[in-house]
Length: 222
Length: 277
Image (cartoon, rainbow over the protein chains, first blue to last red):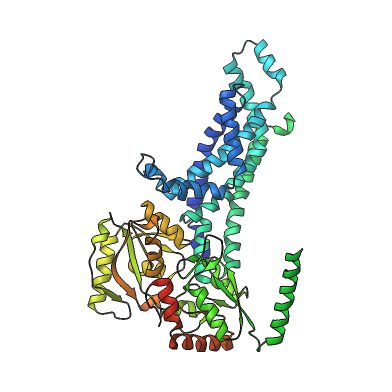
């Protein structure tokens, strides 16, 4: 049991790495998609709408299979400049998780932006702030504040979703746990150990999100 | 409506027959298999479990006057599910090894087949030459030499194995390659064809089945036939340690099926060669 615990612990860095890289890349994607959605131009908002619809409407497991096993079936992809990236399970995992969190977070951000009262925008206009300045100084801070609770939830979902990448040969927490189980035939203990590690990671995330919420004074704002 | 009637009738008949012809404890035997290891056991395009072991199991059950019932189970949980009673027997291309015998018991081997390495024909590995056989029971200089030649050829390369197999044990013990561990043979096949791994180690038959498909047409084999030692004593039926009576039934049925040529016939049909023990 102790031995298994230390083996599984070795998978934590990979889990954290994949989750943090895809979360950071995912935020950029999410902001871009959210801005496209609310741009008012059909040319921008429709592709964004269908992107979110497609990604949210299909299982993450299938998306990962598609990126990892699906794309590699095409010769032109294997010969393209993207292949060194797509060849690696590590990057396939990151790409899939980035796309997934990008789609979900874009809806969170869009909701945040739309929740900003028109009065604030009009007031900034009256104060002579440009549109860009209004966005940076008024809309964005309020959006972050509004979106934070939902985004904390998304972070937790990401940590859990990262367990799926074990099916593409990545030895993160779940991957190592499954390997140990298939050798020791003791599924209960090992799953308990792996589950506790996820619980601990998510506990830390919850603490940070709560801290951030308090700092941004959401209680006062609402 | 007629369908429903016939289903109910069928159910009643089968219930009756089980009761009427029950011969001791084992009138029905649940057999767990993976369904992803062609041609041993796999799932055809209609979703049915087929393969050499399915045919053999039906033959063995007939010899034991028992009903066969097949249960599909992923490989990485196949031993725990046997121990927990989800089924009574594993017939899933599982080699009889000392390591597994610590948890379950086995019938005598019903087929045996060496393991081999496979690569793409464009790989430098495809021209690797060595002795024809690598018998791990023999620890002489020739064995040591062949292993180190294999290891040197694949040092630092990506080598695929499926999880919790004798092949994974072999790679862990003898190779310094970058190991990629797959849940199933099918997924490993795809990655070999896509060039994500430089080589894979598996049973000959399952790789040959893949080489016959369009996706596997560039796959070739290299290196020696590997057997003995930690690769085990051939493929047998896994049985819970408490079910000594069931093991005795399987041992007898397998011996009979081997003696009258049934195993050879099934083997020829699915593998194109005789793997009878």
